[in-house]
Image (cartoon, rainbow, N blue to C red; front, side, top):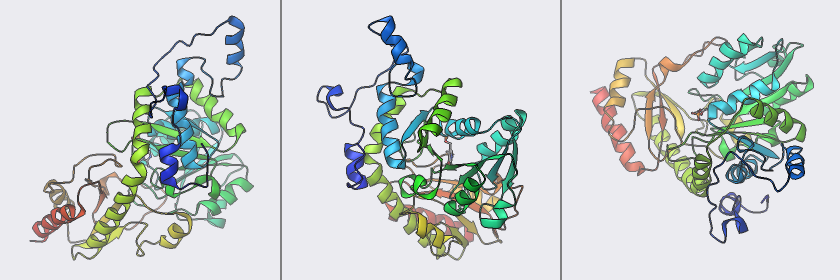
Length: 394
Ligand SMILES: *Cc1c(COP(=O)(O)O)cnc(C)c1O
């Protein structure tokens, strides 16, 4: 279903349903399988000619459960086709491997998700792809100057991991397209609040592990495109790499999507409430949340995004040490200490030690932590944070 006249909540209730394939049940079953049987040798040969379409030829090419999720992700992203991959990181890796080759050059923002940097500095380099890391806030002449004749990919992630710089995607895409490069974007933070293909993106990446799954119980990713030519390159690469996702996890992602709109709306409001509250605390130097007017790229955020998720940063005044910030987090009762985000549970992590920069030297001004707000009562979360800050200041 691709009915743009309906609101997001309606589409998330009605898209990707199994219809008659589920014998009348609202939800589909889980289709697991490797071998797909065909009525004749000729029929099998014919099916093989359509490997890039949603035909069943062999388990690795996908089955009904994958295809229902693919359709829903394409719907959310506003693209033509999506492919489901085993993790969010696989959804970063496959498009990079698809659109780059030996002797070519790639631009990656300095604020990118750490494992994306590791891939560029590891396997991409080993296979002859050169990467330049760039300041995520540049556009125009400054980004154009970094292009080389062999630059094939401009990678973006907006807002940036841990530091939440908002990128001017349309301006960057204009420069990239004028030079024949593809624009890849990790759109996990924006989810349906940022429509990548309206802003010039060619491949949009999602870690479905986050808000789509929503329950911290699956790992899954997606890469979505908006043209048949890009689909062939992307899906062809995923096939060559033997990429596959568990149908059980796809089923859980489909289930997660049914409530994602509601969860996101709650978490957006709760995240902003906690962020504003933290902003008023004397221990806090600044809160790094694109949805707050104090964010350096707030105007850009308002122009391009329709809302925010519940992941943001908090920077403490310089008098607080890393050990004090860790002790604050250790003492919180309702915030788990762990990686990932987008689940129903709140999380907190010290981030200062996780930030690697090679192109820029951003001054955060103090120790930083990353906060994910879940579905708990916001007043309880604030009381927990407050007790911790009082201990810290005390
Ligand atoms: C978590 C994350 C990923 C990777 O997702 P996994 O499913 O954990 O591999 C990619 N990009 C961003 C921005 C993320 O936060």
